[in-house]
Image (cartoon, rainbow, N blue to C red; front, side):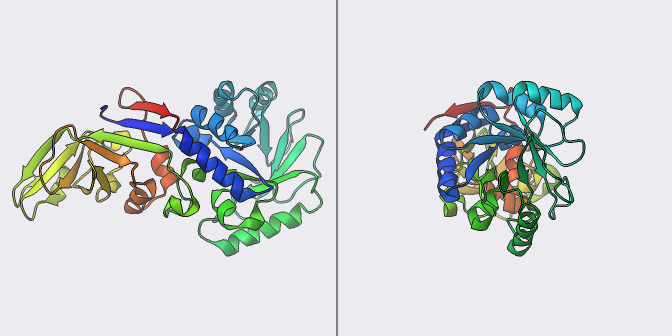
Length: 339
């Protein structure tokens, strides 16, 4: 096994997309594959999502869209981040759609006008009279995963501001709103994190019928026995209070296993075991009850070990964890499987 092995399951991506399509009913699913598909691989995820019923793809920049275009030649791609004059020309040539929130509104390229209803970032204060190239209207929820009242207020502001534009596609829902706020589904929903089988609420993704799409594995590279009072790792953050076995696993924060994930649990073989001591750049220590064989599989994501668990320990969100995984050679091997 590679020291750091990632496996993307396209069947899980399709299952999650179909689940979202079913939840959305008459609304379209627009799959958000920005940040290289939240670290999962946009060129692999995007075709699978489209096959399962997504009707458009969303990215952050024209550069991301251009990199993705060869994998999805005829797909509808919406660029949600800022663009300049050079980007507009490239968007025209590549048949992209642009999100815009300031004048001038570009011409001869499909445009979505973005209204700021409470996010306090990109967005127009009010919707101008839409020109002939405007195909959609949108806003961005600030707290759909944590504040239903504020989210509903944002939705009302948006609906009031766009009441006269019913002929345009209106899209506001992210994964959290699509799953929990039916009124927000409108014409289309831009779903990202749920597509990858990670809960936008930081809880069990199975609650929504979602399947994590990414596995991360390593192996036991060495085993140590600590006597009482002995320690492992920098800063002596773990000192054995009794004779203790630890397994050393050759991944660390350079691979995306963050320093603040010490205390989380991984699978050593089939047993859940706690990561102890300081997470190093290239190694973690896992407490075991007994010595284990060198080469024993260690599952860092998969088989019930989910990003949401690690995120709670690190006081962050699953989005950040998967976006921060280092899947590039030579540190890691990446595989794509289909079922």
